[in-house]
Image 1: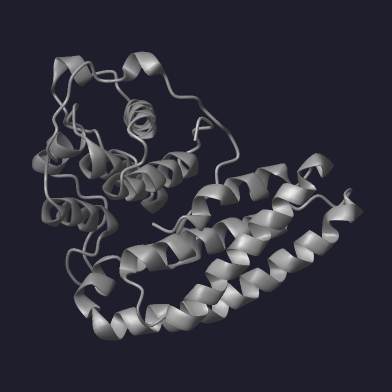
Image 2 (image 1 turned 90 degrees about the vertical axis):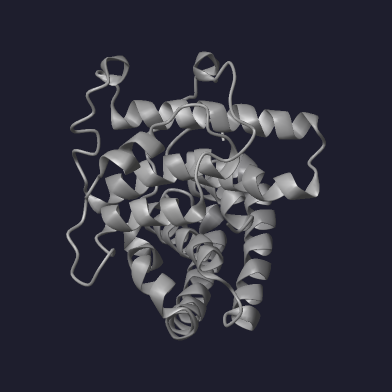
Length: 264
């Protein structure tokens, strides 16, 4: 996922504070460079990257919508944000069209994620809980991308043409609620619940007969996952950001921030 999305929460939720104006200027300049990259490379960005830009598009639109009218000093920044939204609208239309041509199967399976209205920007915040961090866990991923994609398309209803959405198989439920998973299998467990919530799936845990999980809600699972994703990021910091960990570090911040956890 694109790095610019990580810092954008500062723009959305700090626009009311004049002390942050200089920071917002820096962020807008950085986002403008990212928009330029999309304009130049829209035909070469994979679906995951385009989804990152789509999330940025949703957040920018929400920032414009909620920009305080009582702060005229920041309206030049709002104007810059509106301009940025227009640039993204144009470039993303081209990028999505290109994805449909170059990878039609993957495009069809994840088409709902390529519409900015699918994504919601949080307005209420929670904190993670260090006590929820796993005492021990796996070093290898718990499942592969193929299994993850299958479970997500069952939720989205894109597993076949005109497929029924919100299907949760026992295999998917057990996989996506398994504790101790690291890295991408952990972040995709969170993403699975986020996609279900955005798709309107209201009974993702129905049928889970495990006594130890009887009282856990979907939001509580998100809290468990983000608590462990924060721990994972702290571990990455201690190891000085090796190249192979930078992507998961950024993805954790993006997803948990989008899920409404203020620690990120």
